[in-house]
Length: 155
Image (cartoon, rainbow, N blue to C red; front, side, top):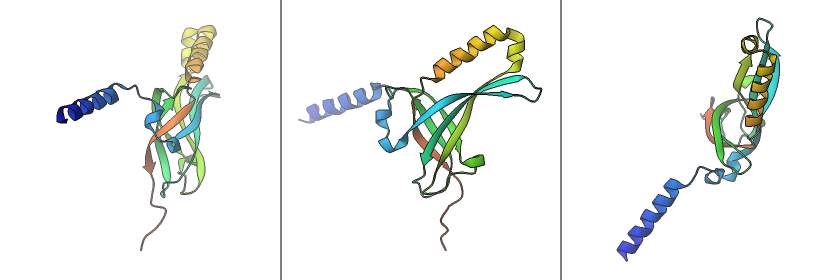
């Protein structure tokens, strides 16, 4: 009987160690819709600038102000395809308890200097290729929080 239990324990540990990382290992409450948007702009020298911005809305049920989060990027099948952190709140001042708000992160920038070196066609192909890759991000699993000051003071 002990040998059978030991073998079952080894089997469970082996299976868990070899499972691919999927969102199923996170609670449903931690998974939020997110996407990476293409944002055009101009740098300090007046050159074209493209950034890819990760954004999501979260609801704070933590009891403290959330100033940042760590996330896994998930594709449509809930497979982890990337990770990053994101800063939260308007002007990154955090999201107070019981409130909802946005968390954002610039995940990549492609500047005008690259446009000068490669030319318009190649620069456009790079931008489109990266956007195709980033479109795979469907949801984000929140795996950690960064907190600001305590919202509730104790006396």
